[in-house]
Image (cartoon, rainbow, N blue to C red; front, side, top):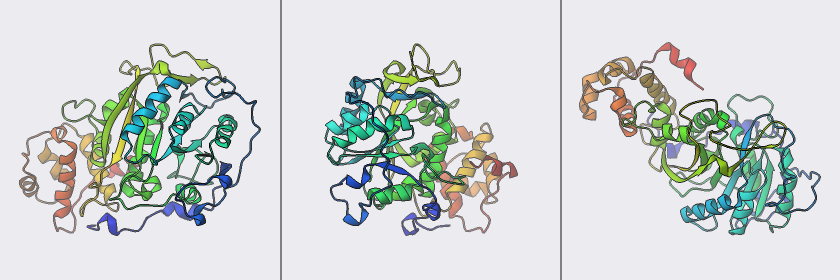
Length: 401
């Protein structure tokens, strides 16, 4: 299990089903991306929906969805879009970096990005918005690509028939001419969007599995996420022993894997939220997307999640990451146990030897360990040469996503 990640194959088991899914892109055959080899500029199955009357995106309300299966929020405030573009540009290492925008909706942020000379791939899962995005694409001289798919359902782990808006990343990226880069290189592209509030935690876990296994979008390198997340979930994401009531396995895994940076805080009133009937809801004092909760904040946090170059080591790889996940879940199931008690439950390796190697005291609580301490604990146990290094409760199998 001590295989460095750099020596591993791309491990895209999902690629076997790449031909099973069909998807639609708007006008992809005519798009020209600078620096993309001609062999990768293959046209996708074009979708040409009926366009609405020509109106300015910032002035038109004709893009409002008539029916929605769930409430979603969109960036509809031009001032907010301008602010976000400024922030993203300040964070960019290269002016020509590619943006992949998730569910752009009416395209307010899309247009602002394009006006800043950025290149954008818009992944839209709602057909209602496609005519507007297609109209915008035609005026952008190949700077915009529009694809009908759902980023948050990309590469499903439990999938049967793959069809729009569900997408296989290998199929999508191959047709867009996006090539994989080594993990040690800079980020190949930047993703921007809003986490669906209803499924925030589930999506965060799915992305963690993709990240640690180097699959899906992370098989192409250290893809950077710039996403709006509810204030409540952000606080959990960055929690540590100083706020133990929020500290959990999710916190540890994201902090071990990524540099987490808070870029901007925006009140809910700046976003457009739509109910089932298609009308826009007025956001007042509470987040209308989340379940009733006294701790739900009134703000959305734009965070940047950049995978660390040194995430993978000789003892933590994209092969044995699932054991690391198991260890953390078991630790936080018994969060009030002493470290010594956990070591005796986790591994048959001599607990005293592990503590000595880590320089930790056995009487400290497991929730007193910081994220990097958990990584050190895992790697210390992995370093021992015993053939059996781990013990897990049977119930742990039921906790795997």
